[in-house]
Image (cartoon, rainbow, N blue to C red):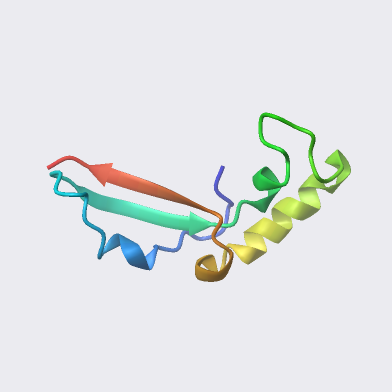
Length: 81
C-alpha cells in the first residue's frame, strides 16, 4: 500500500510508450516500500520484529519524498484509447 505522503509523479511516465499498443498513462507514482520488502512478503520470515513496523512505515513515508533515490515500487495507471 502506498504511503500517505503526497503523490509524486514519476518522470518516466511522460516519455514511456506502451510497446506499440493503444493506451496512455494517466498516473505514475514511485514510492518507498521497504516495510514490505523487508517483511519477507508472503514467504516470511521478516527481517525486522513486528514492534518496529510503525517506525519503518514512518521511515518509508519520509523516504518517499525522494522517489528517484528511494523508489522501491511504482504504481502505474493505464487507460485504453
